Structures are given as structure tokens and as C-alpha cells.
Image (tube, rainbow, N blue to C red):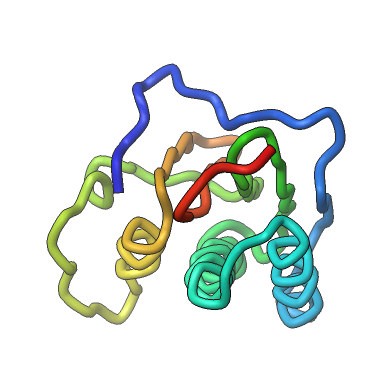
Length: 145
């Protein structure tokens, strides 16, 4: 996974492929919607499996650490990108990013962003007291039109 430059912004489409809010009760529905949108974009079976796993990890982090409720947008503009937001207390990204080696297991977690980083083309995290926004791009064999 390559980290984008600090000022990097996720590609923006005129209209998101998917824009939804979610709670724990919505995880299965949103995973299916992400999978369906990814399939329409031409991702292969393994690419979809990794992508949906990465997006699911982000949603689980929102449920566990970001206040239990979040928003998700899928965008397509040459690259399939996902943006997940929450309004939680934020966190110090330095202890989690960038991490090239697998972190140790702990009672509070700590593996989710590492897993996402292994399955995404890039990972950008902006976090503060008003919440967290995470952007990832699908790791694919090519680009999209």
C-alpha cells in the first residue's frame, strides 16, 4: 500500500455510486451494496473480496470506536474509492499509520487499519475531535473509465 501525499484528495465523481449511512444493524446490507457496485465497476472476484473486507473493517471501526454510526460513499473517477466518516472523538493516527508490520493483538483492537492497508491501494486518515474520515482506493489490475 502506498500512502498518498499529505494533501491528496480522493477522486470525486459527479454522483457517488453509493451514499449511505450505517449502524451495526446495516452492516450486511451495506456490504452487499458495496459488493454489487464493485461488481458493476468490473472488479474481479478476488479484488471484490479484498475490497469488501477492507470497507467492512472501516465500518466496524466506526461502530466500535467512532460513535456507532457513520456514513459511506463509493466514488468512481478512474479509481474506485470509498470514504467512511464518523462523528466520534477521533484518535491519534501516529500510533496506527503507517504500519508495515502486523500489529500485536490487543483487547481494544488495533488490527483493523492494518488489514485495510493490506487490501487497499491507498489509505488516507484525517481524524480529530469532530470525527474521522478515512479514504481508501481499491487495489485493482487496472483503472476504470
